[in-house]
Image 1 (cartoon, rainbow, N blue to C red):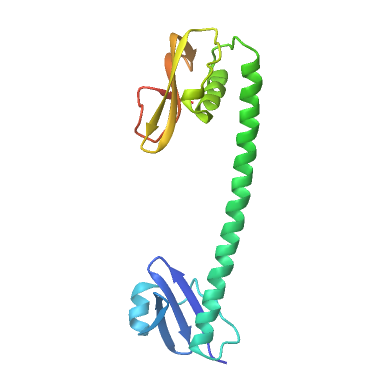
Image 2 (cartoon, one colour; image 1 turned 135 degrees about the horizontal axis):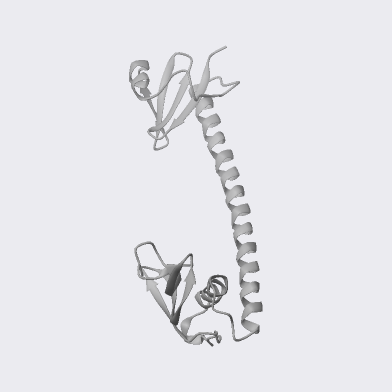
Length: 182
């Protein structure tokens, strides 16, 4: 029986049918020598067997089928992750709604995090700012397409042995560096 297998790496995909090797690129098979292939990848490790292949075209189809299965598995994993993230977001949003019902809200790290999360979910034009035990101002920014919300307290609070009065949530790295991220 002829050896039929395929290999996927960062540099591309390679197919083997018997003693012939091919590089799979842009939906085309290009013959490649065994020496060229040895310079790029290991001929011993990382290969997937393609059984019952009678031609190079069969190996190619087995490889494409393998890619489709991997893509479907990745999409399924991503869907599960998104469901979990949305569920966690909903729980956090409900916690924020509960805390906002009981005003004035104690100004501590956990409560400020929930208030910032709640405000970040809203458009600043529709804000009805909740009352905290400390005076504060809140703003919302567009950080290169990512929304960030900040709170500046009139009196700093103690967090990890440090007096802090500026907090943020959202935004991109490198934006609003004077604020403590919650």
